[in-house]
Image (cartoon, rainbow, N blue to C red; front, side, top):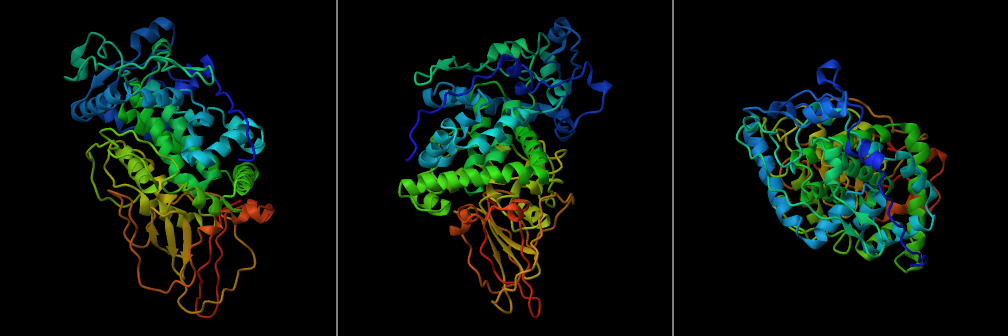
Length: 547
C-alpha cells in the first residue's frame, strides 16, 4: 500500500451516550398512554401482540426501578417468545465462549463504524479505508460520519413503550413467574467478560451493568439500528461492496445475541429502525447532493489511487476484481450458529447469511405469499447503487428481492421487515424498451442495469438528464414478473424475449469518479437516460454509479 500509518485507536463510547441514545432510551414517556406512538413504535407494533407491556414510569429512579422491564406474555406470544428465548440461548452458549467471536462482539458493542466496517471490504480494501481514515485522507467521509453521530441508533420511544425485560436478568419475571406465561424466568445467559486489546490498549465491555443501571429495555436493539443505519450509509458511499457491508451489519446485530444482551426479535426490530433512519437521510436530495456524493467521489478516488499504487488496477472495478473483494478474498466470517449455518466465504454465502438473519429461523406467523410491499421512501436506499433508475424502478428492484410476507414483525412494518438490501445491491436489473423492470437477478459480482432494444442498436441520448433523488411514496409497486421473495435470493421473471444489445458493466463501477464526471450535474442526481428513436427504441446502456 502506498500509505502506511498506524490504525487509528477506536473511539471510546461516552457514558452519557451509552446510557441514552446509543442504547435507544430516547426521551420516553412516563406512561405510553399519554402520547401517540412515534414512527418506530408504530412500525414495530406487532410486538404488542406477543407482549402486553406495563407502563414505564420515568418520574424518578425509584419509579423506574419499580416499573422497568415489566409486562405480561400474551397467549399469542407464548410460542414465538419461547422460540425467541431458545434461539438466543443457542447463539449465546456457542458464541460467548468462542474467543474470537466474543471479542468481535465486544468490539461491535463500542458503536464505532471505523472498528466494525473496514473488514467488510476485505483485507486489502478494508486496510486502505482504515489507513485513509487514520491519516486524515478522507475528510469528507469522516465529516459525514461525524455529523451522523449516533443518529442511526435511534429507535424512538419503542424501548420504553414495549418495556421488555433484558435476557440476562436474574429473574425476568420480577417475582411474578405467571407473567411470563410459562417461559423461563432465568435464561442462563453466558456473559462475556471485558477484554483489553493489547494493540490499542482499549477495553471493550459488554456493558451489562450499564444496561441495568440505565433501565434500558430489550426491544428493539439500538446497537443493531446503529449497525444497519451506518452500514447502509457506507453502502451508499461504496455500493460496489454493498452486499458485504450489509452482511457485516447483520453480523453486528448477531453480536448482540452472542453477548446475550438482546433477543432475535430485538435485532429484527433494530434492523427495521436502522433502515428507516438511513432512508430518511438518503431520501433528502440536498443531503445526497452536498454530502453523500462528494464523500463517495472522495472515497472512490482514494481507493483507486491506493489500488493503482499497489498494482491492482486503475479503476475501482479492476481493483475489486484483482483483490477478490466480491469473491472469496473479501469479507469472510467463519462463525456459524443455528441461524446462519454456513460460514461466509464469498458473496454468495454472504447473501445467504444475510437472508437467514432476516428471519432468524422463525416460522411465518402471518399470511405468506402476499403482494410485495415497498415502504414509501425506501427507494432512496438504492440511490447510488442504481443512479440510472427512476424511483419507481428502484422500488421494483426492492419488491423483486424482498423476502416473503408473514414473518415476525412484518404485519405492522409497512414492508420494512421484508427489504433484503444485500440482495438488491447485488442485482442485475433488466429494463424493457418501455422502461419497465422485467427481470431482477441478485447475486451478481457487480450490480448492473441492462436496457433492452427491440429495434435499433443506435442510441439517441436524451438532451437533459433527469435527476431522481426525491422519493416517490407509492405504496404497492407491481414490478414486471413475479418476484420470488422467499428462500435464497432469486430473480424476478422476465416477460417476453427482446434482444439485449448492451452489456452489463462491472468495469464501469468506478468510471464516474475516475473520469472526473462527479461534477455538479451528475452529483445532483442519479440518472436514468431514456433513449428514443423510431418505433419506441431503447438501447442497452452501460451503467455507472454515482460519483
